[in-house]
Length: 307
Ligand SMILES: Nc1ncnc2c1ncn2[C@@H]1O[C@H](COP(=O)(O)OP(=O)(O)O)[C@@H](O)[C@H]1O
Image 1 (spheres, protein in one colour):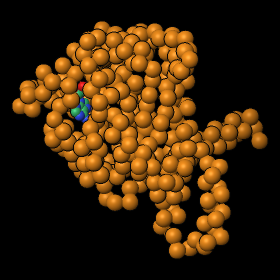
Image 2 (tube, rainbow, N blue to C red):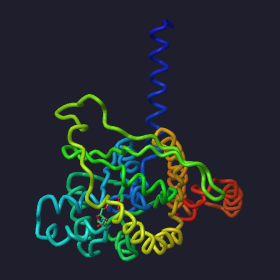
Image 3 (cartoon, helix red, strand yellow):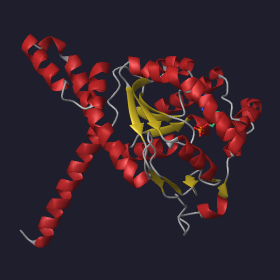
Image 4 (cartoon, helix red, strand yellow):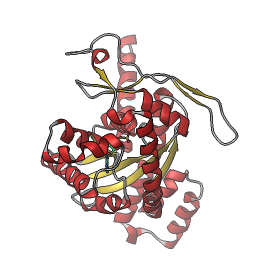
């Protein structure tokens, strides 16, 4: 085999391995005709949008950010947008009925264009929203991101958005030592590229969100803490809650998140398959699978619990 042939063979194997890895990672096909969904929970500034959007583009599924749907209404000065602008600027939540309407509309448009799965971020934010979610998506997993409070505030203050393409950047350079109860955190800034990629240079269009003023950030965190517990409980009771603590920047966090989601997805798919053939499982097999479950990781056990 020539050097070139060998290189091609290696590249082929790498491509196949990568695509089967991605296939396993993708949200499972929904059991109903609703789109399957993973939701990304967590406080303002934790990086829900960053990780959900990167994960979605990696998996080829849609990323839907509730905050973007809300801001589009304000930007387009729709009747709803005019009603909610001051609530958003003050850091308050907008009414459940309105956010549910916006999400339902977005999911319907996606279904018409053939979308079968999505990663949601910034939704649900109240228990009522969590309870309403199964009427329009097949929720399979809730990834609950967490990060030290000082880092959350620094990240919200450092957030910059490109006014042209809506891409998120962050100028905060976070380096917090560990404390008795908290891990050290190191997060370098995420600056826009120095050169323009395509039609514009993000560097020239960076904007600060009105609700990223320090007082408003603290208020948003209070609002988050007031609503978060019951939502986490809701998903925990269903075996769908996956806790994920962030301690570093994107290059360190993304592979860790991918690998935990990968394990979770495999377990969930195995679970769905066994659900489709429950009658084939003998008592002996059940005993064997119980033994295996006790050595699974937390997400695998959660997935098993949810099936
Ligand atoms: N699910 C939701 N329910 C109610 N209000 C929402 C929801 N999602 C977004 N909003 C409104 O949009 C604002 C911005 O949301 P988002 O972009 O997700 O920011 P962050 O997660 O940084 O607070 C929120 O402070 C709130 O006013």
